[in-house]
Length: 148
Ligand code: 4NP
Figure 1 (tube, rainbow, N blue to C red):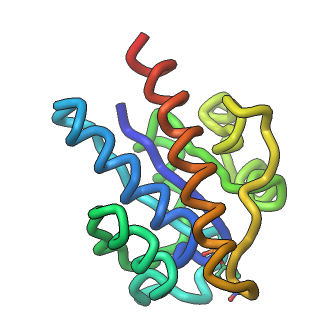
Figure 2 (cartoon, helix red, strand yellow):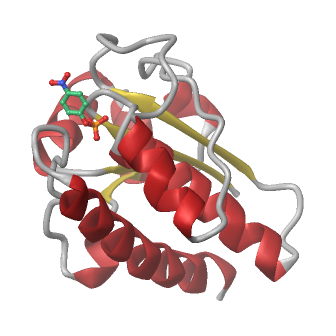
């Protein structure tokens, strides 16, 4: 499987999702998967993940070395699943995704009912904890689907 996690800036939510999914794959001994993340905006391209994302991950022993990059056209070819953190990012992906790859797009929280992963950027550290909890559960559910 090749999985791309997408949010707006690729500095808060999708780097966390990438790091958590990598950790789950390591734990399960699933080698050979491709996991990456990207932003629908290129505003933070080249930046490391937000320190609040890194702190939440560090507290649970998960490393994060993501450098922000924007979504590019080839991503829709390269990946089998492209998971958007919220409806706004999904809409941005739908606008640029070739119709033949449309079925690869989904909301990250689809297995939990399809709510948005709330944007934690302008909030406090508890928002980042909440994002971690949501992604941890949703990615377990995605892994069950992908490995069934
Ligand atoms: P992310 O969070 O999409 O989860 O990386 C954000 C990062 C930056 C901004 C908004 C959300 N921003 O407005 O700069």
